[in-house]
Length: 200
Image (tube, rainbow, N blue to C red; front, top):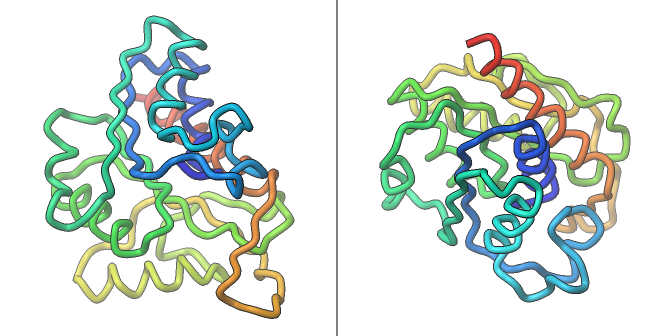
């Protein structure tokens, strides 16, 4: 439940999605406050899934929401799919988990949309929806494309990404973020899912 994921979940809940499962192994930290809806002084140290669960219920008491505090790994990926999902939204920043989610969804013909990288970016107007094979500029998308292709899977599924070149930073290991790019990406991502479901 990152900056992108928290906003995507919020839009889904406020748009009337009735069944929702959220997955995150982490707790709310002070470094999350600048970009995550669930990150407040009052929620520091709390499980992210618990905070999102309570927030969703506060918005819509009738929502059926399952909150799983688990880290996605190759050995447990099947555990998340004990029930049928209309759509899977991948907002993880761990490339290994991201690949496992994509593999499972593609193998089982489950609708999938993945969030790419929005660190060190400051222009939300450059965020787009495209198939993975159409992405450019984004370093995370490049790495994701390579791994999916090496495994022999199709790159013909949707992602949300930015064509903005990441800002130059002194230390490339520092992935700075802000309040508006991840949130914009989450809103765009959720809108794509909702519009797809409405068409169905």
